Image (cartoon, rainbow, N blue to C red):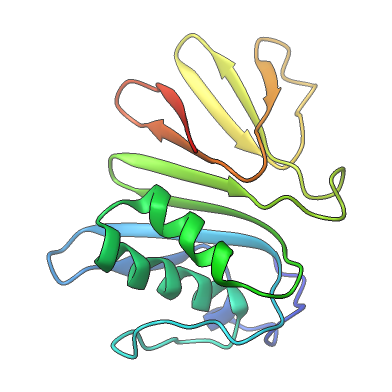
Length: 158
């Protein structure tokens, strides 16, 4: 399902985007929001589609090459953007997920929530109140929330 604000409605523009590094590490990425300016990334990455979302993935991977830290890479990507940006992202490797919500002009529309129970977590753009056993917390804007897949430990990166 895709509401296309940048790029056409087609398979190449559909989330999540899947990427495999030269070392074989696999990751997925999805983005909600619109970025209207030019997004910079290393030319070794070859977008399959025409979305700002896929370009943000490649920009994050470009920054990761320099920092070797996904949290810093995500913060750096969004800090480089000059125009107001309304965006949420989820970036996930085999071991960890990184969730980021940019502070924005539509705080009730672009939110991220984490639902917790003893042995499970849900990340969602809305509280799923029909699932009673989860405790829901709004995720902070402007910080990267990191989830360790093995332990389900949640940390917040500045």
